[in-house]
Amino acid sequence: MSDVRTDPRTVAETVTDPELPTLTLADLGVLRDVRTEGDGTVVVEITPTYTGCPAMGAMRADLVHALRRAGFEDVDVRTVLAPAWSTDWITDTGRRKLAAAGIAPPGPAPVRSPGPVPLRLDPTPRTAACPLCGSRDTEELSEFGATACKALRRCRACREPFEHVKEI
Amino acid sequence: MGHEETVYEALGLAPGDERHWAFGTGFHDPLAGVDTTVPDGIDPSDLGQYCLMLGDDALVLAQRLTQWITAAPELEEEVALANIALDLLGQARLLLARAGSVGVLGRSREKATASIPDEDALAYFRDADEFRSTALVAAPNGDFARTTVRLLAAATVRLAVFVRLRASRDQVLAAIAAKGVHELTYHRDHAARWVRRLGDGTEESHRRAQDGVDVVWPLLGELFTPTDVETRLTAAGVAVDPAVTRDEVTGVLTTVLERATLRVPPWPADEPPRGRSGRHGPDLAELLIGLQGLARAHPEATW
Image 1 (spheres, chains in turn brown, orange):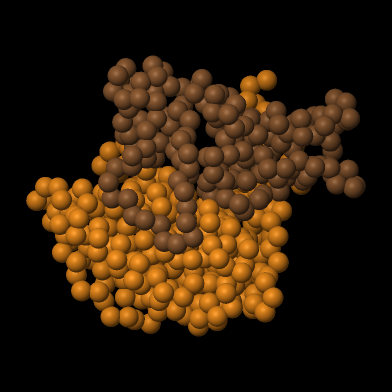
Image 2 (tube, rainbow over the protein chains, first blue to last red):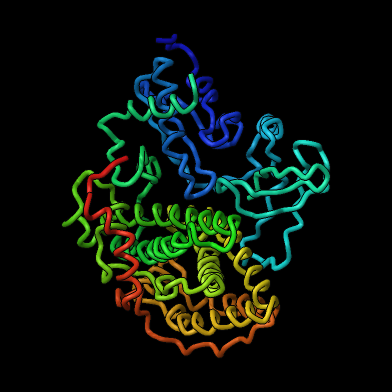
């Protein structure tokens, strides 16, 4: 058993995302808070990227496991729904790790007003540099990729397909 | 230690065997740790019924979209429909869990054993007459063009409601809506571009898209009439009166159809809310057999 005086936040910040294992939950902005309550319970707050993200159960289990291994017996992982997660919460470190893993990081999230959402009938003006060769000359193949958070793109310069974490 | 190994080892540590979730591995209450206090002056039963309306629409449409898996015209589209279905399933889980949190479980608890979470009991152990979804989402897929037109209509209606629901006095509904708006924006845009592409495509794709429009349009008649539950909750600042979304919905749909060179059929006259009152045709019953059959035959199954 590890030293129980370790800061639980430090432990929680090492836990990686089940679908993007090169990134931590902290890099993704999914880890919202870690605190110790008066009775010693470690409370961890996480927020889902997408409502249906099937990785939430694994994230929760990984956090509990990591904290127990570090000596924290009572761990309470709570879901926070508001404010809704945005790709703007992915840290600079997270963006560098995504690019290094061959996944184009997201651009700025769309600006949202309280009113109706405008319809976009034309292809999105989104761009993403190819994470393999760096070219800006890339095209979107599908807004929906292998996981809910990623779109599928192709580089016109090196012809390689790649994934892009779509702005949300 | 490999990452996968960590996950499975961790699941094995879950206290009280929380893996014992009916149809998945290691899922937990999606509202764990969320403050589910009911706002002042709100009848919990009304709130729960409203959550069933919004949750059932998402659950039923997710099931229909999932029927395209292994059958979509191209792999990218199959992945897209599966992703949209997954988003809707996530919304359904939260909304059904919210209904369960205020004790609205109908007759589902007579059939579901105690270890089955509320949202699963509601999804798998209610009969058709307890569902509050509209006929728009229960209608069969038809061909890809009709599926796409239906998705456009359903996503447009839902987005118009969710945009307004972000201001709900119920903080859980407001949070679900705020997340859902991000997702539904993608769904509506995706469907709208396909309808435009099919309508303004070949003679065959245009014909199929127009057929889809003509089949889907009559299903819009019940969508703008509030139920008594919606009227009461709207007055209390919790729900959205569907009547206020009419101009936005008809405006968006008209824009898409015109750009797609499709004929806009006359808007159907307003009808009483059948699906929201639990009155359904055979489409929903047929869908529920596929959705619920396995769960009912093996109510405690895990894998």
